[in-house]
Length: 103
Image 1 (tube, rainbow, N blue to C red):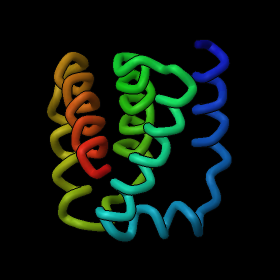
Image 2 (image 1 turned 45 degrees about the vertical axis):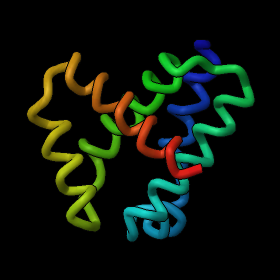
Image 3 (image 1 turned 90 degrees about the vertical axis):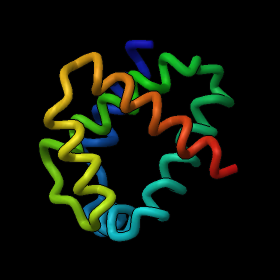
C-alpha cells in the first residue's frame, strides 16, 4: 500500500495545470473524474477504507492548494477546513459513496 501512497503523492505533485483546471472547473466533471479513479482503485482490489484514505489525501491537498472553482467545491473546502481528522475521514467516505452512485 505504500506504493499506492507514493503514486498518489507523485500524481498530485505533477498534475498538469490545464487538465486540473478542466477537472475542477465543473463539479460534475470533478465527480466523473473521481468516479473514474475510484473504479480503477476497485479493479486493483483496493478496499473502501483504502479508497477513503486516498480520497482523504487528495481532498486535503485540494483544500490546502487549490481555490474552489464553484460553490460545491467551496462548500467541500469549508467543511474540510472545519472538520477534525475523524470528520474529514467520514467526509472522504461520503465523497466515495456520492461518486459511486454516479454509475
